Image 1: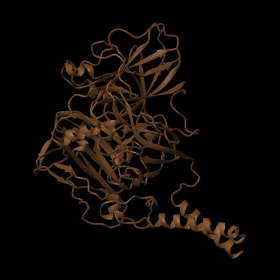
Image 2 (image 1 turned 180 degrees about the horizontal axis):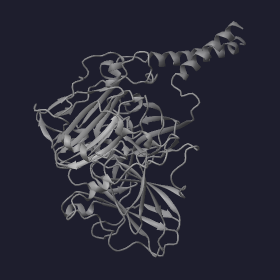
Image 3 (image 1 turned 90 degrees about the horizontal axis):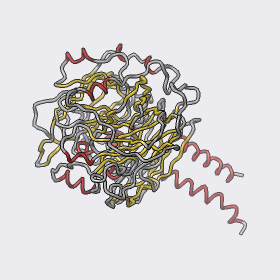
Length: 584
């Protein structure tokens, strides 16, 4: 009997240990992903791409608000791996953010399990590998966060979901692209645009060679479908349109928008949108779905067009003729910016919570800090071309920032990132923004480079309150939308222009602010913001997970919690077997 009590106590201990990493009473969704290379030829050239669960693009994670997603990732690549969850806000949990500031990479041949809650969130997002330019080789897939049943959706239920991953693509592998950047070379014009990992339909026999597989979306006449479109490319803004069909915009990265009809919409790198598309044509032929490059010059870009096919079940012929026209900015230079300004929050609907999201009156909150984050064209630092924000090119330390904080390791980074551009020469540093918990900050992204940039902030959605050409000044605030600005996690910044956002720093942790453009991100155009609750007795962050990986100055640490759990499990197994052994 004593041994029975010992086993029972040990089991209770194990259960208690397991409970520390679980979310009581919340539904769970489990995913087990093998991440490996497969060989495909989306543009007619065989190349290795990164597949998730043997698929390219990877599987869609379909969850509901407040569910807990557990993702076991097996890294079968030949280099380290991390996944990040683009737009998922990971409340109180930067430990699972999947970027170098918070996580040690998963070594080749090893696995690691992410566990995070999609708290108070709905919408369309995507995941991708965050290291070493790997997204340029694939590894991406969709995330759907559905409303709970008690929360109404501001439109009738569509007949189906259509996922479209659009993005520029190179036939060189990502390691070759990295080498080019390391040598100070530009990546040049992409070789094409993929739709769901496939090349363009052969709409033009000169530009598109034979034998390329294209994507086909099969639909039924008279029905309405929700198109979730993500720009997962390396650096090219794309204009999205469907021949002869209207795009009714209903959601942008977790925010239900004012429902407006667009004939086309610019989707910038790292951005996601949902459209309702009604199949209201007579289907005399199939229709083109097009994603073409924006803000480019020269005939070289004529072949960088993604084309899929919208096929009605009663279609009577193949699509033919010219593609639907792209926007013409020659006489209307502000077309794209004004289109972006027209995207607004639907204040009459709820989202993840019963109350309308618009009831959060951001216009009435006093700004506590202002950060002007300025990028310029690439600059030489120590003989290498680097990208900068406020003159600093971020240099990732070997020890994740959040892990260094947990173990009180000093000297890993500095909390001296300048809030405004300075006059110092450009430099490489592990410099971090010291955010004020519960502060309400204004960030102005000033793009003094020659290419459009998209900026993203992990852990948060921000209100995109203003855009304009020229240099931002205090007078620019007079043009802000202080009523129904869209709340999202990625915003474009046009060359020679600025974009202003407002964000409430209510999510503790260490969070990445980055250029979504892979080349400039790789070359240092990012910074981290450290947000710590100064109240020692107010637990506002989840504890460090038991399976945390160690690297850098902590590489020789052993996860004692995990070892204890494994050893105890082995001990229990032995004890349970002991009565059987005594029989012999």
